Length: 436
Ligand SMILES: Cc1cc2nc3c(=O)[nH]c(=O)nc-3n(C[C@H](O)[C@H](O)[C@H](O)COP(=O)(O)OP(=O)(O)OC[C@H]3O[C@@H](n4cnc5c(N)ncnc54)[C@H](O)[C@@H]3O)c2cc1C
Image (cartoon, rainbow, N blue to C red; front, side, top):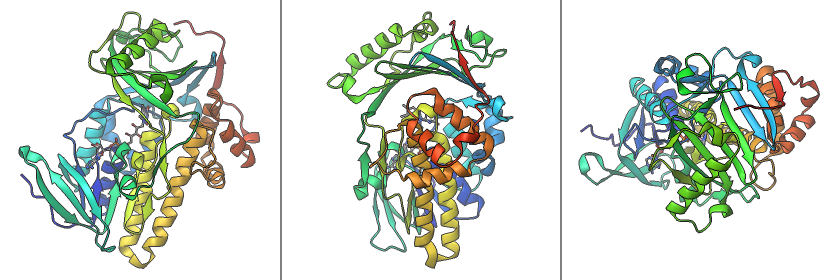
């Protein structure tokens, strides 16, 4: 069993997309990085739809080729039915030469973590972080429990910087007591599970059997209904289906009641029920995440950075989560690299980094939840980000913002930023009927 070092430059907590790509960025720069992950990989995770923006980040960490070789399903875009209005987007209309993907997250996250190891990061699975002691601000001390080989050994590691990439458990925000749940009418929870033999929506807007995947590319199918919205994401050999409903909707239900509610909803919704007509639910696959929209006002400090879901999380209707994790990893590690070279400016670097990460978070939140205000969103920062987007990326986002009734605030910000008038609506297609 490899011994966990007693000290290093940077400790990363958690080995999801945020943690593993942060570790890779640092290892590629020759920085000594140790990543502690409490789970055994591969481990399950939700978040299976990726928009093509993500490739620019995997190019930076030099892992794109490994992802490509895995043969994940390439998706052509999305079809949404929102308040009965049907809409389609195709990525190729926006100049993307590489596809979005439908990924099995256990495999995807494992590729990223193995890649971090191959780049020189020291990774330890089955090691759970319990506390970070910041009393010595130059050298925080991380206490952990090492559960490898059925042991339960306590240990400590000293470093200069801590990256919290612990996902929705938001390790540091909880330790600092800065994690806040969004106060909103859109306070949702999610229920998701897996089906075998579902039909899927193809890029030609028809439904197809799995055997046609080679010839007809799938799209992600999203639909609103009176209580919330659903996703339908075909994977290799199974299909992920999720419901997002107000927290109040399943209040007081036990596990069995939630499962019944999930299945009944799937059976009764238009379009979805047709796609699932001959499908079989995979018993035991139902999972549940309450309380999932949250943020913290304190995500970067002179010796710590909270990235990915550890920092904030927004309703996933626009599939921003993994991309956000990659973005945060890139900016946080840039800040750490500069801080290691020039320690006296490290507070300033961390403040700049916080501003960048809050900006991206505000952007996602304005797009997906709309009703921001006191929930940690700075409209000025979001406008600046909107203005700085490459033209085609902006065009895609503006098209996406038309698909739901969630993005009114975002469109208002885009208008104030002076970009809405230039919007051509290219690649945006409204459809009369969808015959599944
Ligand atoms: C219902 C739902 C649907 C979603 N759909 C999409 C989607 O379609 N597309 C998309 O891009 N995103 C989606 N997301 C978001 C996406 O899943 C997350 O944004 C993404 O997983 C964040 O990556 P991460 O690395 O920050 O966290 P995670 O992937 O959660 O990884 C965190 C890791 O930290 C480890 N950890 C936690 N605590 C400790 C500790 N104390 N010590 C050591 N290790 C620890 C965990 O075991 C875990 O492996 C969705 C999320 C939800 C809830």
